[in-house]
Length: 170
Image (cartoon, rainbow, N blue to C red):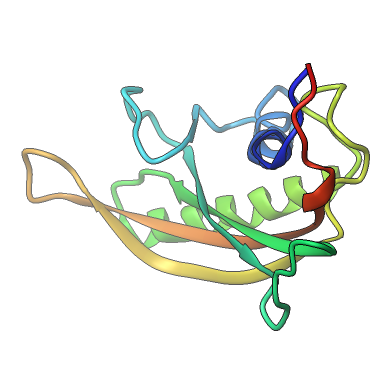
Protein backbone atom coordinates (compact mmCIF):
# COMPACT_ATOMS: atom_id res chain seq x y z
CA UNK A 1 0.00 0.00 0.00
CA UNK A 2 1.35 3.43 -0.92
CA UNK A 3 1.42 6.22 1.61
CA UNK A 4 2.76 9.65 1.08
CA UNK A 5 2.15 13.33 1.09
CA UNK A 6 0.05 13.12 -2.05
CA UNK A 7 -2.27 10.56 -0.45
CA UNK A 8 -2.53 12.81 2.62
CA UNK A 9 -3.35 15.85 0.53
CA UNK A 10 -5.86 13.77 -1.42
CA UNK A 11 -7.75 13.22 1.85
CA UNK A 12 -7.99 17.01 2.25
CA UNK A 13 -9.18 17.40 -1.35
CA UNK A 14 -11.93 14.83 -0.80
CA UNK A 15 -13.02 15.70 2.72
CA UNK A 16 -13.81 19.41 2.32
CA UNK A 17 -16.17 18.97 -0.67
CA UNK A 18 -17.80 16.06 1.18
CA UNK A 19 -18.81 18.46 3.98
CA UNK A 20 -20.84 20.36 1.37
CA UNK A 21 -22.21 17.52 -0.78
CA UNK A 22 -23.55 15.78 2.33
CA UNK A 23 -25.94 18.69 2.91
CA UNK A 24 -27.28 18.79 -0.68
CA UNK A 25 -30.09 16.36 0.05
CA UNK A 26 -33.65 16.50 1.25
CA UNK A 27 -33.72 18.10 4.69
CA UNK A 28 -30.11 19.28 4.36
CA UNK A 29 -28.84 22.84 4.73
CA UNK A 30 -28.26 22.90 0.94
CA UNK A 31 -31.28 20.83 -0.16
CA UNK A 32 -32.15 23.34 -2.90
CA UNK A 33 -28.72 23.10 -4.60
CA UNK A 34 -28.99 21.50 -8.04
CA UNK A 35 -25.29 21.09 -8.85
CA UNK A 36 -22.04 20.92 -6.90
CA UNK A 37 -18.96 21.12 -9.10
CA UNK A 38 -15.50 20.33 -7.74
CA UNK A 39 -12.48 21.65 -9.66
CA UNK A 40 -11.76 24.26 -12.26
CA UNK A 41 -13.50 22.59 -15.19
CA UNK A 42 -16.81 20.88 -15.67
CA UNK A 43 -18.97 19.62 -18.47
CA UNK A 44 -22.06 19.72 -16.23
CA UNK A 45 -24.80 22.10 -17.34
CA UNK A 46 -25.42 25.02 -15.06
CA UNK A 47 -28.76 24.66 -13.32
CA UNK A 48 -28.93 26.99 -10.33
CA UNK A 49 -28.56 27.09 -7.43
CA UNK A 50 -25.03 25.84 -7.88
CA UNK A 51 -21.91 25.65 -5.71
CA UNK A 52 -18.57 25.52 -7.48
CA UNK A 53 -15.74 24.34 -5.20
CA UNK A 54 -12.24 25.49 -6.11
CA UNK A 55 -9.20 24.25 -4.19
CA UNK A 56 -6.43 26.83 -3.93
CA UNK A 57 -2.70 26.00 -3.67
CA UNK A 58 -1.48 24.39 -0.46
CA UNK A 59 1.07 26.53 1.39
CA UNK A 60 2.90 26.42 4.72
CA UNK A 61 0.82 28.02 7.44
CA UNK A 62 1.59 31.75 7.16
CA UNK A 63 4.29 32.73 9.63
CA UNK A 64 5.67 29.19 9.80
CA UNK A 65 8.59 27.79 7.84
CA UNK A 66 8.32 24.33 6.36
CA UNK A 67 11.11 22.28 7.93
CA UNK A 68 10.78 18.82 6.44
CA UNK A 69 12.31 17.10 9.48
CA UNK A 70 9.50 18.27 11.77
CA UNK A 71 5.73 18.38 11.84
CA UNK A 72 4.63 21.05 9.39
CA UNK A 73 1.37 22.89 9.39
CA UNK A 74 -0.09 23.37 5.95
CA UNK A 75 -2.96 25.53 4.81
CA UNK A 76 -5.26 24.76 1.91
CA UNK A 77 -7.89 27.33 1.05
CA UNK A 78 -11.15 26.34 -0.58
CA UNK A 79 -13.31 28.83 -2.44
CA UNK A 80 -17.03 28.14 -2.74
CA UNK A 81 -18.54 30.11 -5.62
CA UNK A 82 -22.31 30.32 -5.18
CA UNK A 83 -24.74 31.14 -7.97
CA UNK A 84 -28.50 31.44 -7.76
CA UNK A 85 -30.42 32.94 -10.65
CA UNK A 86 -33.24 35.44 -10.32
CA UNK A 87 -34.63 37.87 -12.90
CA UNK A 88 -33.92 40.71 -10.48
CA UNK A 89 -30.09 41.03 -10.13
CA UNK A 90 -30.41 42.42 -6.59
CA UNK A 91 -32.46 39.43 -5.49
CA UNK A 92 -30.03 37.06 -7.22
CA UNK A 93 -27.12 38.71 -5.38
CA UNK A 94 -28.85 38.31 -2.02
CA UNK A 95 -29.68 34.68 -2.78
CA UNK A 96 -26.04 33.99 -3.72
CA UNK A 97 -24.80 35.53 -0.45
CA UNK A 98 -27.33 33.47 1.48
CA UNK A 99 -26.15 30.33 -0.30
CA UNK A 100 -22.52 31.18 0.57
CA UNK A 101 -23.37 31.49 4.25
CA UNK A 102 -25.23 28.16 4.14
CA UNK A 103 -22.13 26.55 2.62
CA UNK A 104 -20.23 27.90 5.64
CA UNK A 105 -22.83 26.39 7.97
CA UNK A 106 -22.39 23.02 6.22
CA UNK A 107 -18.65 23.14 6.78
CA UNK A 108 -19.01 24.03 10.45
CA UNK A 109 -21.62 21.30 10.95
CA UNK A 110 -19.34 18.57 9.63
CA UNK A 111 -15.89 19.91 10.49
CA UNK A 112 -13.75 16.96 11.69
CA UNK A 113 -16.77 14.74 12.29
CA UNK A 114 -17.39 13.48 8.75
CA UNK A 115 -14.99 11.50 6.58
CA UNK A 116 -15.37 10.80 2.87
CA UNK A 117 -13.29 7.63 3.07
CA UNK A 118 -13.23 5.39 6.17
CA UNK A 119 -9.43 5.02 5.79
CA UNK A 120 -8.90 8.79 6.14
CA UNK A 121 -7.46 10.03 9.44
CA UNK A 122 -9.78 11.16 12.19
CA UNK A 123 -9.78 14.90 12.88
CA UNK A 124 -7.59 15.67 9.87
CA UNK A 125 -7.81 19.44 10.37
CA UNK A 126 -6.38 21.44 13.25
CA UNK A 127 -8.43 24.55 12.40
CA UNK A 128 -10.79 25.97 9.82
CA UNK A 129 -10.62 29.75 9.51
CA UNK A 130 -12.93 32.11 7.70
CA UNK A 131 -10.86 33.95 5.09
CA UNK A 132 -13.13 36.10 2.98
CA UNK A 133 -16.64 36.67 1.63
CA UNK A 134 -16.70 38.04 -1.91
CA UNK A 135 -20.29 39.32 -2.19
CA UNK A 136 -20.55 40.86 -5.63
CA UNK A 137 -19.04 38.83 -8.46
CA UNK A 138 -20.64 37.91 -11.74
CA UNK A 139 -20.66 35.17 -14.33
CA UNK A 140 -21.25 36.12 -17.96
CA UNK A 141 -23.84 34.06 -19.82
CA UNK A 142 -22.20 32.78 -22.99
CA UNK A 143 -23.81 34.08 -26.17
CA UNK A 144 -25.65 36.97 -24.50
CA UNK A 145 -25.11 40.30 -22.78
CA UNK A 146 -26.56 38.89 -19.57
CA UNK A 147 -24.58 38.15 -16.42
CA UNK A 148 -25.57 36.40 -13.21
CA UNK A 149 -24.54 37.69 -9.77
CA UNK A 150 -22.41 35.33 -7.70
CA UNK A 151 -20.96 35.32 -4.20
CA UNK A 152 -17.96 33.37 -3.00
CA UNK A 153 -16.82 32.39 0.45
CA UNK A 154 -13.28 31.22 1.23
CA UNK A 155 -12.16 29.10 4.16
CA UNK A 156 -8.60 28.12 5.13
CA UNK A 157 -8.14 24.55 6.35
CA UNK A 158 -5.03 24.01 8.52
CA UNK A 159 -3.58 20.58 9.20
CA UNK A 160 -0.34 18.93 10.36
CA UNK A 161 1.86 16.83 8.07
CA UNK A 162 4.81 14.67 9.08
CA UNK A 163 6.96 14.62 5.97
CA UNK A 164 9.42 12.01 7.29
CA UNK A 165 6.59 9.50 7.79
CA UNK A 166 5.48 9.82 4.18
CA UNK A 167 7.08 6.74 2.69
CA UNK A 168 6.17 4.20 0.08
CA UNK A 169 5.42 0.71 1.27
CA UNK A 170 4.85 -2.37 -0.85
